[in-house]
Image (cartoon, rainbow over all chains, first blue to last red; front, side, top):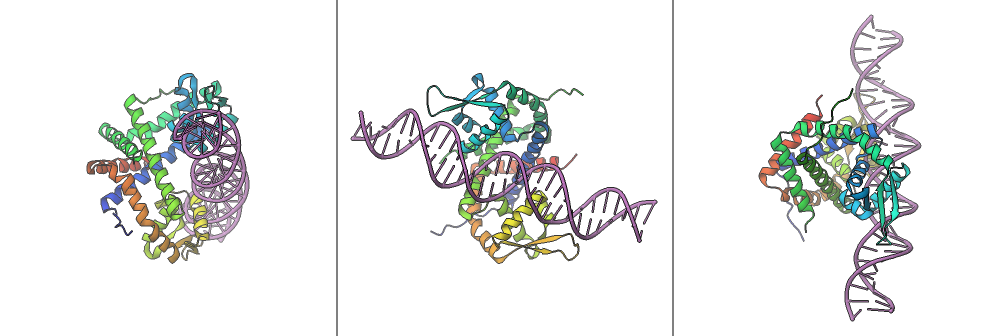
Length: 153
Length: 153
DNA sequence: GCGATTTGATTGAGCGTTCAACTACCTCGA
DNA sequence: TCGAGGTAGTTGAACGCTCAATCAAATCGC
């Protein structure tokens, strides 16, 4: 069926391109900093963070995939790498024999602890220092609205 | 020198994680849609868009890299692929013998024209439909502030 | 209980990006 | 005018991600 395209008006166009440019530049910058200072991409850093916050530093692979917003495949590959680096280990899940549990090693925790200050400083410098408190609040609401909306129909 | 880390307070933490989750989910969704419907990733779509808007559909490689926010290397690889698809061609720059000019073929333009309605609809559905007009305005200001800030020191 | 379906996780191939190295050309200053 | 340093663009290897296929185990329906 022929549906009329709801094109973007000039304001929307400008907003969309500004958002694209800003989020790409921000993530690229943080990714490069993390790669340079800690030898890992941002996605891997996030995995270590989430594991470090979990009880006993352990999480089921599927939960870890959920909280990091990652596909199972991506996580599987990533954990393989992190295991090779000695930062994470896998073990069988006692209650579900299909399941695997990833846990953060002491070495992984130490690496994370070493990387965190520099990364947090980067987030502050590149994101929060550019925005007013009101804008920070707006950005949170906007982001939460987007996430809610994407997780619907 | 030992510099005190300016850690994120709970509100900032929440904002940062919400932004991460939202922008990743949005870009992943749009990327997947574009790959499915047009057979190309979003980065390639953007290259075609920028070329289509340029005078005579031509741009120097370095300008194209700038407007798409891409590294020269990335663009070079991308244009190689787009050339193989028959959507873009390269030619020598007449005024600078180091230079290359990328131009959009009729085939590339047609492909873009076919992909655009679906993609624009996706941007509207996943981004603008989730936000109030005020939030759209806020998002533009925030994004422009971020970009300005990242292009400074 | 038992087949059918769903869920949890992994694998390998192919693709896109990064990084560093490299070539070629341009520009500027002494 | 010639050499140093900068700029334009490309290349190949390594890496991370996606997609589809796969396997095993759990759960559902009857």
